[in-house]
Length: 453
Image 1: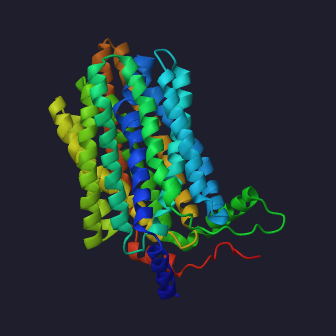
Image 2: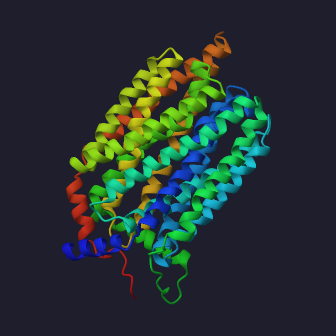
Image 3: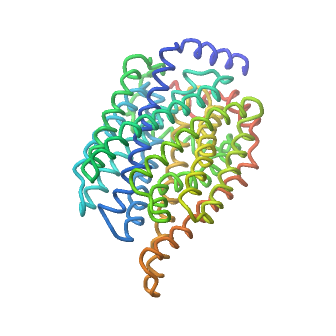
């Protein structure tokens, strides 16, 4: 049975043309622009320093991210189940991509004091970006065989990192030539257009491989989705290693998301980085990110995905400890370079391991569970960071410390929480039996819910 399943996977992989894989890579090239501009280099700092302009900025940024992640947590497993049954992965990916593109472009209209407008538009853009990622990731096992997943995933991540660099190289000269908030705001519709254009090859060149199935009598996609979802939860005992892996991911992903979402704020508050320095910093991080995706993908192919993932987590923990102690902008740039290497390994290999653990025919559903874990942790982590940073800063201000010094100390205490999540997640990951998880996935034949009635 396992050999027949492997043959089906390989036949399916051979049907993926070079053009289809390029289209899949280019989507990552485009959506990385959103991450680079909105989450990292531009909008996060603009929101904190200009739109809000007080110590509450860090808290409100964490709250907005948390709300978006909570929504994605609720909808992604259901939408994943619908996509698996209806064969609509590509259509759902494009719907949420359009949602993210439109709301990202609309952030141009956000100016000083428009706090709630900024939060609503960002939350919607983030929901679209994260939800689309579920379907993008779930296409991976459809275009790559089991022995190719690590290589293809790493290559996609590397190309995505290059996309993040290119958009920043477009925006940086404009901000240097035209100082002020207008060009900062204009960078957002530029990013939206860039994201949309990079999605076109996927629209025209990538075939929807998942076949739709007829609904059983009396069922709708929603009722069927909830029934299958409930059955999958009840049957998770059959996937003990997968469950442990999701728990590990839930915890260590907190640290990754916190580092990503607050990097610009840390740079601005702790090291006085302006918009130009932040863009240069993120360019450098994206360059090392591309190198890290390739390097850790190579390491995974020569050892195992789990060992390579653990190596990247240890590296990231050391980076966080260094960040807590750093005093200069130069140190922060060096730290960012190593962080880019480590985070590429963590994120790319997390996707790779899930592809290895997901049974054939249920990839979108399993990626939905992956999203539940990731988005739940993403809700908790940023909120915890924002609370620690803001509470610490406000307490020190009440004790007579200057606002600048208080905010800096608050950021340092919050940075330690990133390392704590990474460390605990790594310990849990050590307990996962990777070989057993892959064997269970290969031998699974829709035991949770029969597809035919």
